[in-house]
Length: 359
Image (cartoon, rainbow, N blue to C red; front, side, top):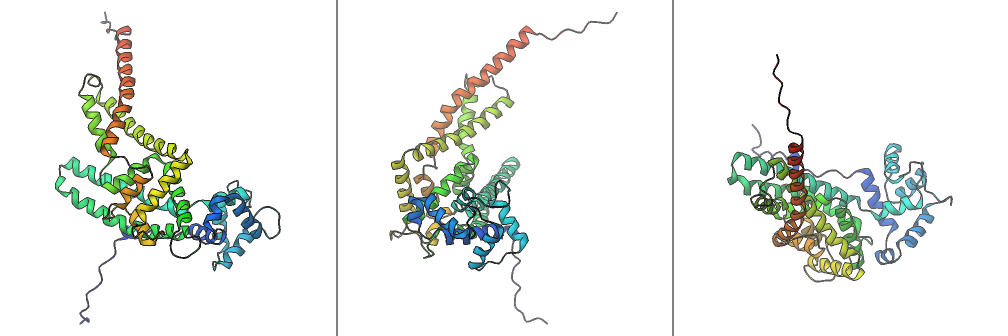
């Protein structure tokens, strides 16, 4: 007979966070050692990092060897094997000459690998949600939509919280367990910079935040146009192409809006100040880990993720999306109409030849 204790339920492997890689662990440790003053780093990044580089370059040859990096890691309590160090060098040594020059060193330490992992997870979660919702739609099983969305939110929390905590720790340069304004600006800059590299990531993040898709709004605009005089001559295949192009161009338009903000130093600072206010829920002038979690979790009950994206100029309302989609659609329809007319003209000039009957 057993003790009667109930067995713990088996953990769902799909909810387990991705383990921290040796490269990410090293980056987190080295960046915290290299950048202890976020204000000085933000004001003069090149000079700040150059001083650190020279300190680590023990033989003064202007480059960091595998051995020199290994010794710095050991001072952080990390003793990597030769294989792990080679993986680290492969990530940092971009020109593959066996050493790390200052430009490579500066670029790598200024980045935030934990944010890359966060965005990769966002993309994976959104793709999974889209597949499931499309299957429900195809099967006509709309009643399960909310249950699938709730499960997606639960999965997002389990997957993203550990990654968000890594993002927080890597940006807490002085290790005091809060992000001050200067540390937050570094965090916002990395967040926007990485998001801007992948247009589809905006839709993925917004799709998880709202559990809807830009595609829903854009599809409605396109279907209305396809029933009008300017779009009714398009074939079904052409309609699919137009809708896909329209969806992509709307995402680009949102990113262009952010580019305009970044081109103006005052507007950029204002957007960062607004983002800081959104996250700083208790108004104490710094960001704790729980507040950062709330702004980066798509399922946050207080809607802070949506407000955070809006503050950074990366969130469009349904009305804004419709306007963008309609503006982009006019040009796309003209392109396809010209293609239709060209095809008709070709067929008129080159009518199919009638088969000649055999004698």
